[in-house]
Image 1 (cartoon, rainbow, N blue to C red):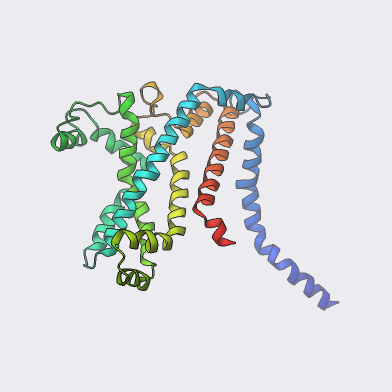
Image 2: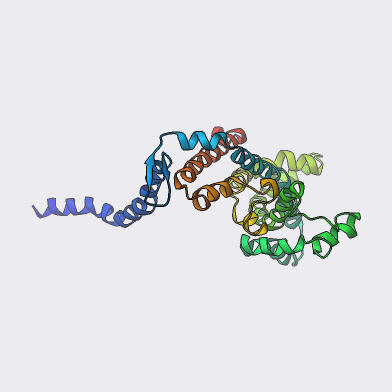
Length: 299
């Protein structure tokens, strides 16, 4: 009898250890997830006034010109994040990985340091740097290419998005560089030496040896950069001082969600935007992983 009780106690013990985690997951993840899903089918006027409207929230969002503008801005930002920001990060990582002197640790810290401060702080700083005539960025562009001294970056609809991209470039290049640097340091040096002995030039070594070796890291960085791009909110919000720029030129998907849920007070529409954003991120991320060949390699 005691042996049976002991065996039953042993079987229950893992569940007792898992119980706190499961309870917290249900309270702070599962319940909010289900609640947000149900909320997306309701129209709200404050937290307590709710009315079931079916798919009306989704149809409104998908036909709203402001949402289309937000998707366009977010997609453009994501494209520049992948095809401009990440190559620069990889290039810096390769330069620092090739360096053999003791100063490379210092340069790693310097390049990475912008990410140590928050997006709000960076947005406030660059809102000053983009000031016409007296802003440091305008003066730098004037001294470099004799253009841009009088540019009103945050007031011109055609320049707001480039200003946000430049700000994000300064902030996140070093962060992604660290991932690439970690991947480069794990590349088998003997393979590189063998390729060089066979007569491969630096580009051939990179394309045929280095890039395949860091492919898992590169896939991770691309996917995470895409997710981060579609979740962008604090940086343009601080840069534009709580507004969305002229002609909604600084409006992003999460900014649109914020506007619907908290400024207009329609939490149901905001929840619908959140689920649409989740679906967009899921589709794009899975497509990127599939195209990278990671799924096939793992089989």
